[in-house]
Length: 116
Image 1 (cartoon, one colour):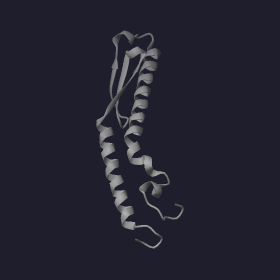
Image 2 (cartoon, one colour; image 1 turned 180 degrees about the vertical axis):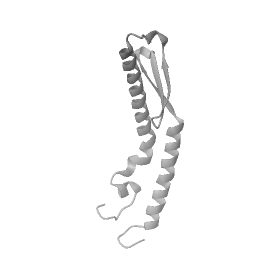
Image 3 (cartoon, rainbow, N blue to C red; image 1 turned 90 degrees about the vertical axis):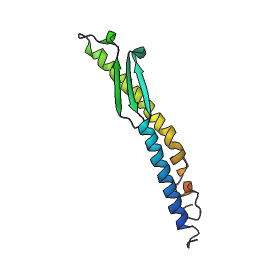
Image 4 (cartoon, helix red, strand yellow; image 1 turned 120 degrees about the vertical axis):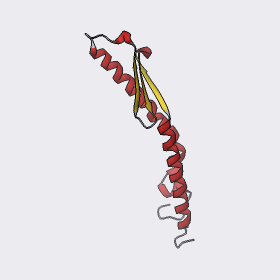
């Protein structure tokens, strides 16, 4: 136990554990995919859990050379929907790792630190 009522080794151990959990969560997110749709499924966007757009599917019925604005709106809406899904997945995946951080050291289960 260090002066001041806390164990420095415990802090380092908790930080290492948290770093490992964070790396695992990030790997999960990189491997996960979510989809977003618009136009009742006429346009579908697929993104990874980290937000990288990996696929875009457009039903031929919405391709009108005289109305590219509608197609652009549908694509944008599908990508936004997929991005929202990815953000939600990220929050859900990372919550167990970061959710307990409450005043940083307090979330590490440590007491006796200044301000704790």
